[in-house]
Amino acid sequence: MLKDKRIILGVSGGIAVYKAVELLRLLTKAGAEVHVIMTRAAQEFVTPLTFQTLSGNPVHTELFNLIAEREISHISLADRSDLFMIVPATANIVGKIAAGIADDMLTTTVMATKSPVLIAPAMNVNMFTNPIYRENEERLIRFGYRFVAPVTGTLACGWEGQGKLAPPEVIFEAALETLTLKDLAGRTIMVTAGPTREEIDPVRYISNHSSGKMGYALARAATRRGARVILISGPTNLAVPDGVELLRVESACEMQAAVMAHVEGCQAVIKAAAVADYRPIDRKSEKIKKKDETATIELIKNPDILAGLGAMKSPPFLVGFAAETGMVREYAEKKLTEKNLDMIVANDVSQIDAGFNVDTNRALLLFKNGSSVECGLMSKDKLADKILDYIVTGLAPC
Ligand code: PMT
Image (cartoon, rainbow, N blue to C red; front, side):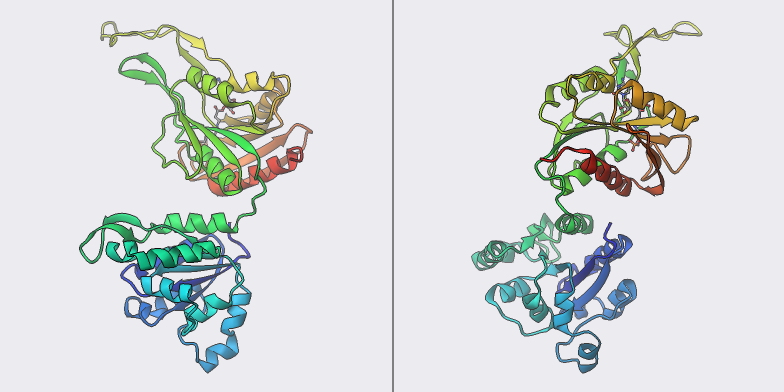
């Protein structure tokens, strides 16, 4: 996701320095080229060698290091970066940048950069709420610097309050968001995710193995790319992606009602949810008691939400999913035509590394015009971006 992106990771001194190591791991895993600059205080907590080993690049510590300056000067480092991050950022470093002080490698390089700057502060709660710090942060925000707010909790100094460095995953997501082209700005996209639950009685239901991971990855990616995202989700244990409008539902009928109530104004609908095809014809109001050796539950067909959207007079761009265990292309083609879709994402859910409740997927994308694209094994996040690339191409201009 960050392939070909060059990031400077500035590390200033605080107990949270070890979390910058975890962030570095996430950035390099996503394909970014990372150059680390450490202040003197940061080196008291973690050695430059750790960052050097994990980044695969020399760590910059001294402004007046002749050898390092000959290899790559602080100005060319600043010039060539796509994103400048400071994690963790102390009150001291934020104060220095806000005051225009450039007296070491980190402050000098950040002063020289033209790239976006993302700062994740970590400090004692009283420092964080100190009006001097507040004014420094606000001043930098006015100049276009972005901040990832620290979280509330027990701080290293023993105090309780806001000041803990945000989790590395949250800072990573903010970096992705900053670097992502907003090619879905001005669009509203509906995503459905997760399973539905069809109640049999007050204690039992029919459902499936959908975790919601695929749908939530799509919602996250579309939000990052600037879309307004309406996420209609069956029951899941997943964290709600920042910025999405979430509507929780349980049954297929509830999902249908939510979809139809919000579809107007959507330019695209992506139906990643695993909707139960049938529900018990008669939901019992009391728990069914154990009696005979066998029991029968009579089922009735659920409304096909996607087919309903396909039958609209002027439907939005419609993307269906097909969860198959064999004859993947054939069944998916049938669904594409019968439900009047623009595109269908077929996944073979009989494979252990694809489909339900895993972080990866493997899909065959089929389009209305008869063309198709094979997507080999990849993370659901990556597949989400690929699907959105095709939606961007398929949407009429704003
Ligand atoms: O949630 P995860 O654990 O990440 O797993 C992802 C997934 C396997 C659930 C996902 O990738 C996927 O394949 N979702 C679609 C599952 C499904 O219901 O497929 P289907 O072939 O039964 O349905 C075809 C399409 O019609 C789907 O877009 C479905 O949302 C839609 N449908 C189905 C039945 C129904 N009554 N209404 C519908 O809208």
